Length: 274
Image (cartoon, rainbow, N blue to C red; front, side, top):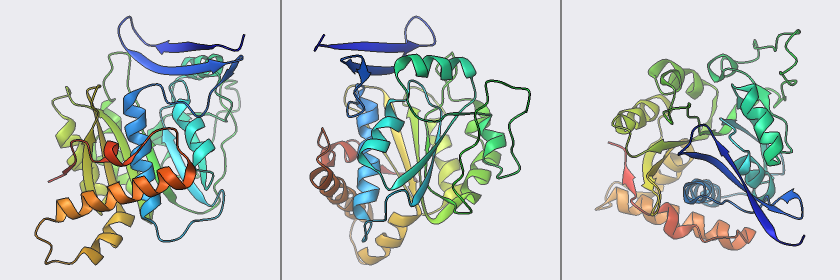
């Protein structure tokens, strides 16, 4: 009592798919236990902090594909209340595990390929595992976050191909941002990054994690619009964008009192996708 414990979700004997900090029997929604999730949060902070105006609470539709134990969604709900997050997970067993981990938000059980097609998707009436689909009205997504891996710790092929990337891009707003968690030891991650960049447009960059072999991809139409102000005479556009992201991430860190610094995380291993 009064002390912290940790709950870990695994798909196999070696990989920790999710970690949650439990205090007094409840999940600490302000804690991201893994370094790569802190980097993901830093990218969210960079994009949000770079926007000129603070949007109203619940006004920005967002989609999270792959739930795991639910730590990232709970963190976003806590520190980014302007997001209206839909969470999609293909495996009902993972959803059950997420509930045991302490996830307290709605989770839609569906194949992401089918779900992102649009409003034509409806859960089967006889499937007790499906929850009612949340509604974000007619607005396209301002943020999409993909963190989906199979039992072999690989991104499913149907979630990183041109067809899926194109459908996803068509569901995003003109200022939308896509953030994807990838593994550096995956020999195809650079090609995957280019596929999403080509589909989403805008500017695309990656950053790395100091203590984990993860690569976080960001494809942002809103940063592209802001990047026009950098001018064509900049000697190093990548360096200018890096400074812009660091400034936005630091601003968000201070404005929202985030539990870890974000500026240096978003610039770790920073590289444009070319």
